[in-house]
Image 1: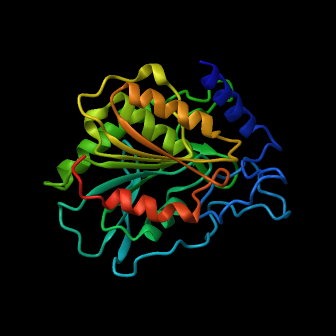
Image 2: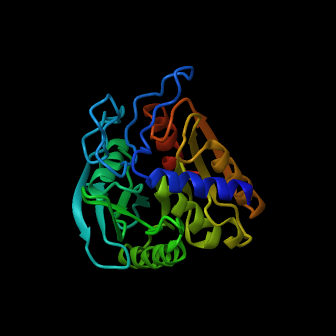
Length: 283
């Protein structure tokens, strides 16, 4: 409970004007690797060398040129509207990855990360249902500062419904993989804790487990790749580690990677994410 309270306080501070989630580590800390994506602050950053907002093109990761992905409009209907990023020739059996952006970002900005991965998968890039800030950003849950995790249970149920719809739309496709950053990573971790039978794998980047008491014991471990920035002040690495411990108690197999950076998807993580997503080992 101490870690959960600390996480709640940190998330609350992140929405207070002037407490930007792009805060750099202290001068004594090693500099972070160039980020590929990061969560948007509540107000536009001042021009003081802060990192780019997520709706601007970021430095592209090193990619594999042999995989060509195209973006389509996907679905604007519920329960979760989405864009689709997939190979130009994608059979129904193509693996499905449901991608969940961070608070303050948008589906189209997060789609850039999925395109840069160059993984032969069908990425379903979801759009958060709630507005955030004045620049068109979205969020998944927690519309009130006093209740930062309010609504997460509804989003979990909507993810399960979306997974069912996608497997009906693409017969023969395996169970979907979840890929999330920040608040999207929290949603992914909560979804697999509550509904472990519905998802094949989880990649949770700079996330935590908001409601550890809501999990159920899994009959089969779900492989997970969890990343945490050593100097992250939005979701501290201790919160990620605490969530991983709870997921182990529920019967899962999370691997935690702590990198020399802050609240971001660092360039150095891309090869590990790509390898995890394409690992042919059965989950």
